[in-house]
Image (cartoon, rainbow, N blue to C red; front, side, top):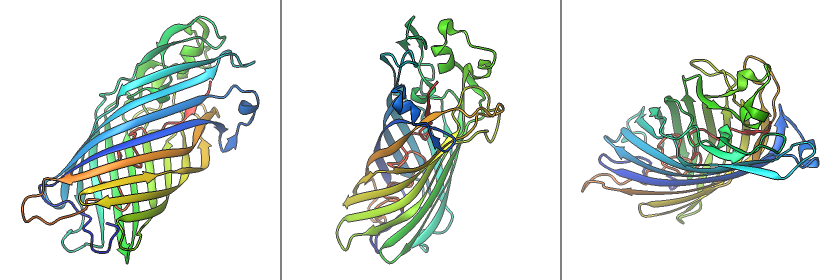
Length: 363
């Protein structure tokens, strides 16, 4: 939709296939908005690496209503020196597998045949707990001794163990060769905890936690959200476009529905999000690199404990979409939202993980 004449809508009977890859590495610790520089100085910081590949498909039932299915593949690692103080050898734990599948329906609020230069779409979806949420690996306790097979850190589990509801809104407005966009997605997870022992248990000698840590002994199933806004501009008459926006990803302190007990890392990060896009025929390639601006590790729910978490400085996002299957004589469209990705819900090239990057806390 970057060109002035491009149609941003899928035609009835059209399909859109997409792949979206996401990668990040986080190692800078924050408590609240304050960076914990002593973790770097003492060399006992966490290193969290997360990589995912989304496979997705959308089908336009009508020109206004479409349904989309997304399947994520996840590979991630979490490491820390053990013992922590003084820093011992770095111990790594890994998690990989299929993530949680989502099915989402989306509806354009205004007639696409009339509103070619601006519209608003609402979406409702379902997240199924298809991803494993109790992956284990062998690692020692916090003393650096007694390596055993235990549940890996919550941030690298492929799934969260809960059925969830997805609520989303997407809008765009074209002025000249510029497309202004905004979107928001909220994942509602009613389940309180999933029964998987948390990292607190995994790092405790013998798996025995203190009374103060007992409320964090199992993993929580938290809500998550992402917000985006910005502008994309076609570069002359070329197939290239550039975009610049703001992005916010987070995990709330308290869930919208249900309890918020167990081990969670509430917080958010804001990003500047430059992007670059190339379109040819029915294909679109995208590259965006969100750059961290502000990090805030919110206090734990109920107890108010400050906690500490790592946040990425940069995220790498690469996407590809292909449109096909339009009946003969159907209106042609490039099927792109204002962000340069398909308007297909939380799993786009800009947000490949439905968990929206839960930050990785150090013990």
